[in-house]
Length: 108
Image (cartoon, rainbow, N blue to C red):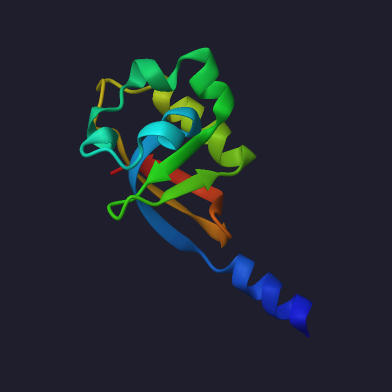
């Protein structure tokens, strides 16, 4: 019965809105005022930042990490960006602790 309840909780979609950031920078700077808006496409594409994985920095300064599929989708989204910063996204998926199992990611 407990496993069924856990599976149902994971299956429900959640929407998370915020700034697309990499985990390396977010680990150091997420609580700094304006970090999300100032974070750049160039930084998101730096090898160490890309390797760290991506996350969403919410309005209340929570860092929600993306799962493997979410990182793949984020990388594609970043490659197609025409703007250099203030990268706001809407991520849809199932929450699993502090990670979101991404079904869709799009610009806000």
